[in-house]
Length: 213
Length: 82
Image 1: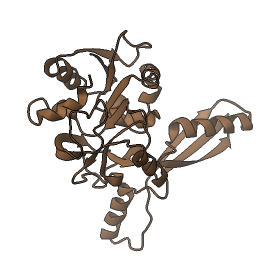
Image 2: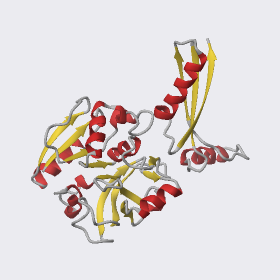
Image 3: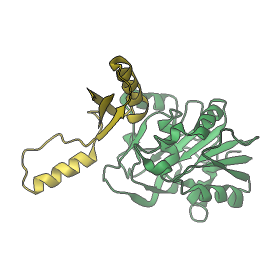
Image 4: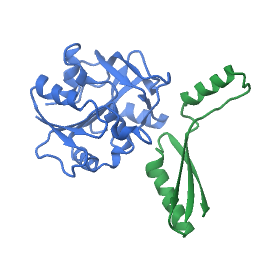
């Protein structure tokens, strides 16, 4: 498997993702700078890492969606390629329309950094196939703007199409329906606020989310 | 040339914890009777174009596509010929 890790100005989890893939999953990975106007050949999956791309100016992920590389990522996803957006990467995926909804400031108004428990809601996807349904897994979160928002109609669509990937067991940020991560309809795009790439040692099983072969 | 002012606010049904917190703090300071406080963004810029209809269409498009996120936000804008 060949992974691409997109690097925006302000990304700060790119290295973690790269090493999670290469050192722990023993797959190949390559960094992709945001100004590239084409993707490296033969990519199987793209990771949009966490951080504060473009300083989170205007809205989290709002400027990134217009970057040159994102136009290629959107094409890649629409052709069925696997894309995982983690934290800021999730915000970029919702801003760019690859995933529905939006992410807002936590109800507590605080940046929350701790390990949380998630429930696997759909285990029939490339990202979640190694988990059992409703399995509880631990994954760290680190965000100030992670409150997932979607209107009632959108929520019903997510539920009807089995697009909810993970729910928080104890909702830390006020997300609608305790949602921590969602898929697109085709299940080749995953966005989640928690950081599976940080599960290198403790909670090692959660790293399987990135292991999509 | 036009001076444009764009206001971006969270939609009414979207919880704004920032507004709530500021409102509560003001209440603690003795400013009583406040409610429904929302905090938004204010953006202003100039456009070097004298055709009002063109400018209006352009500002409408950029407000929808870039300056606001229609999933969570609404916008209003004002134009002034300068």
